[in-house]
Image 1 (cartoon, rainbow, N blue to C red):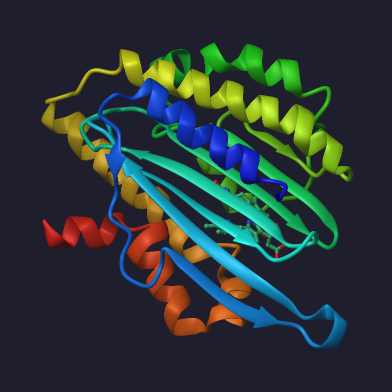
Image 2: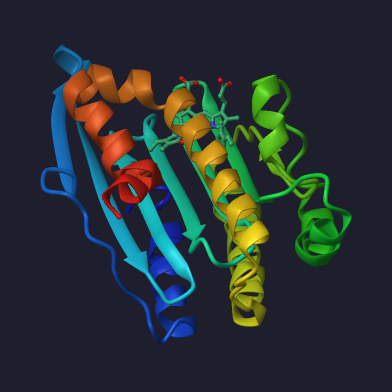
Length: 248
Ligand code: DBV
């Protein structure tokens, strides 16, 4: 059992319970599982990256990338992208363990930052959850300035040293955020307002372009699996909206 396996197991079983219309999201050939041997001598390790994809009537893509490369290399990147006729935020979890420690980012990333009504609808209800965890999960410090526009005021960003903090507080926070997210989904109604639909699509594209272009895992994946596989994985699966829009 690795550090983030319980997070992944919980997410899949909880989504299955809550979303009766959950079904697979196609994973392009070559991405479901990828492995490489990295390091030399006693540092030699197998690094396996496993991908998971689901969708539902309101959620365009629910996807996870799970990287397992020994006790000092574990990553679970889990993101939910709603369909473009809903104003739902993105669910984003970036759970990263490297030799220097853990790096945890958990948020419901808003489509619109400056719309007062949007914050009241999608951020205010989760602030009490955020406030429950913040004392145990102190602010993680520096992060890319240009990324800040994509986070909500309920952004949990922390760099715990102990595994135990991840197994307890981070795991509970992950479960609570996911529960709150699915509550938002239950309540969400599709929009047909052409102006809003246009704003939603523009916001998704802005977010996805940023994440694809600045993916902090690009360097790691390129070292393990090569540039060709990595670029195809980023644009063809992890952040695939532009490709999907181009196809339709
Ligand atoms: N991050 C991803 C994907 C990953 C992944 C798909 C599958 O988006 C892993 C793998 N994140 C990952 C790794 C690191 C980070 C760091 C391996 C460490 C990189 C390193 O130190 O070498 C949140 N993730 C980060 C950082 C942030 C996030 C802020 C620190 C980056 C830095 O300091 O440069 N989540 C991430 C992010 C957004 C988000 C940038 C932007 C909207 O939602």
